[in-house]
Length: 351
Image 1 (cartoon, rainbow, N blue to C red):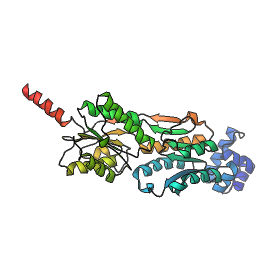
Image 2 (cartoon, rainbow, N blue to C red):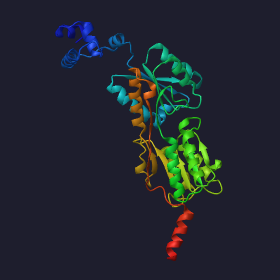
Image 3 (cartoon, helix red, strand yellow):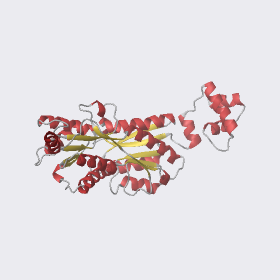
Image 4 (cartoon, rainbow, N blue to C red):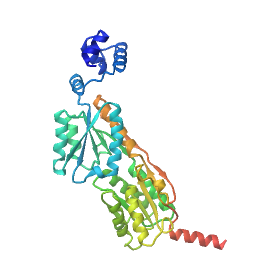
């Protein structure tokens, strides 16, 4: 059934039916409900082209990815995108994924904002002085950032409390007696990773411990990097007795390096990872179950998409800025530092 036939059945003009279907305020609620019920009853679905003409919208969200980093193979990005797609689908929106190179990234965002193929764009991994954000803010085009921008007053964003999460994890390790903590971090040009480093450093400094730069590593969050970084850390003196990892993937690589060094988790080395709750890498299914700072990246993707819808509807970006708390979930991969454990065992034996 097309719009003309639906209008004839209802005895309404095509303009009235179109406006009712697209939520225009000048159509009464009674008429809108009548039109929606008839559309559902007769199986009417407006064509995308007609809807674009009626609303002036593309019914699409834009996401840009770097072909050099090949993020479509990154489970973090895929899980985030799954959350975006869940919400977009419920609203009848498509996702336009645009490939680019670092040299062309700004041009790609400007093209999306200019050519009408999307109604809002979603950015990830903001850094200091992020030109993407500056350009989009100046253009006034609806945008939402996954992560916290340096200048957060001008744009909608969603982030987790990365600094607080790693501060809490660092304090927990210090309380267990660990004095030499290695950090296997994401790329610290991005704010989330820089904040995680700050959190751990603050926890160590509060305990009167000097953060060891030779135990701090930064790079793409992958199993391979986790393995390489952990091997390097285990070649240092004194040895680290705990690892704090920015992803479960890095922790998996670290576990391999720890085992190859003839050490055991948690008897010799404690291990904490940030858990994005990816179904393929369940922290509670590892051996031993992994202690984590936990926040669902899929839920974050869903919320970012909801924020994008709100921006399209005209909501002010200042009212769309959220920082989610992060839970510390203690499991079997953490325990007292070896020296602390020996001291406690000796004290228990003396009693």
